[in-house]
Image (cartoon, rainbow, N blue to C red):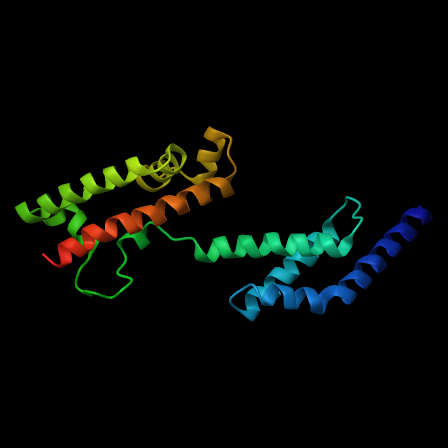
Length: 189
């Protein structure tokens, strides 16, 4: 029992010394790659929390910490920067503040004109979806149109949630670019 306590005390001392020796450099590394100081502080804390909770032996602690930091930065970027499907319909350029895709597409006030525009939109969306690789198209349709969660899709397909999110991101970027042409045509009609 004394040996276990000594090993735990030695481990805690090693963790503390490693954190003290690399903290400033690692924080600088993270801060250069994220948008805010708060995000950098959160990521640094997550990295050290993972380091302290790790039960596997680490041969190169510095390299391991930087690798975990890079992964956390990527996770942070995905969390904050993933385009939402709403971005497809957003008015990024501010061309016409009165133009609202959602109002046009929702069937609340169906007029012959809105019905025609709705049909054009769905035809263009289908054509744009058909241009995507099957994996991107499927995850977009399942998640965005059918409302299936990424976790459920992951369970069905065996893919990781991160992979599915990435595929949806590429689909959204393609659809945003593709539907921008339709939006411009409708605005300039």
